[in-house]
Image 1 (cartoon, rainbow, N blue to C red):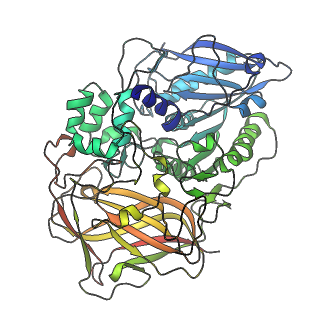
Image 2 (tube, helix red, strand yellow):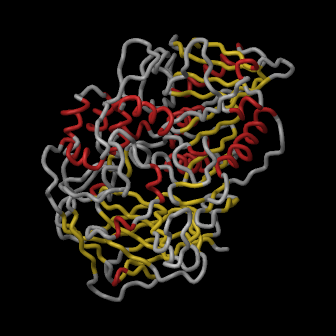
Length: 613
């Protein structure tokens, strides 16, 4: 049963392209046609077009380009979101170059070519040629095209904004991939996303010489315990040795290119999001364990490089793609007091498309429509991050405290031992080794970690008023380490008072809700391109940012920071030696003694962007 389960997760959980809501009358009101659209270099891309039978008016086109198949092929109809059907959109799905029924060679995150010659192609030209063919050949279209997509299809939507066809008027990149080394999917700050990359590429990373209609089977892992499975697997080199056998070309690239080399820089879309013409609404989820970075930084890049173009962002309390399905009322133990996903689809997504593609309605949104967790309210901002914030420093201090005042001691520090053979789990939940990750981990109760001796804990006094944090958390750690490399995981946590009420059988007294956390591989502290070893026992400094939040820490709650050196098996284990980890073949018994410094001379702290109300 493992193989179909794994494929199901790939298609509908991790990188879903749409939510499917079945309409009994769909076949009666829509026609389906399949085409092979020729690109400028002669390669044909398989495209499925669903058109309303209604010819009393012309209809706008919505295009989704996907590497996840436009199935079903042939006469069977794909289920289309009912909101698109109700608005009579022509809905188009296309297998991207080299995937499923489209010709050509597939390249993961195919890089943009700024100055093309002859019939050179990239995703921008394939998008342009597709749109050009659609508006010229699909009957009864109104000449306006929109694009949308989640995750990888979100990347293709973002690519569509570059050198865009004049008919492309509105683009909706949702959780778009942007940079696979710095913060999206496969790496965070140099650490490999082990669970995600191993399971995803076991089914996605294929090379075939023929067209195909079906997904290839996964590994069929037969263990319900991901922590134990990946711990027993040993070093990353064993993934190829025992499971992948060198047959996955992009996995091989992951193993080869373990720094931020030109290989990764060329795939980074962000510097190329310039001179965009279509209106853009970027969508992301605060609890997206895959492409939170992509959503926030795609919006930033568009804002910084396109001063006059329409560009807005929507962030809600969602996991990856959750805004497109379900009601969005809760995640894990935490409720949000409203149907946030339904609100997005009805009040934000459809008005956006209808206004720019059909001239329908009066769409005047905020530049940033952000859900404020903690208070569970939607907030409108004229920019993101908001301009009316100030940075408040909270210092790691003695007796596990987090204070606004700098430590007075000349020599204060806290010590812990990081043993990579017994890494800190990223979740208290058991999960199957063939799944990508436990999605609610990003707001999970952290008491399971706080009790470990290899996790440092610092907290404020109970707050005397509500405090809203809006933007990036800045981290500064000064430390010494007994080894030549180590990872740091920093987590920002909302601690509920002991008096908090029980809700839906969940005891919230003392609950430690994770608000944001991330990992950083210390050898990249000066440069992602040129790592450098830690000098044992020398004072080192590490500075990085946690991805944005918009959270209200309520009166009576506490702010907490936790620090640890593993987050397993969400991320790969660091052998705590300055080596090429992807080629390491040893054991994980090199424990590191880490001192986090918290004194007047060498201080460690977090800076929070506090909203001025």
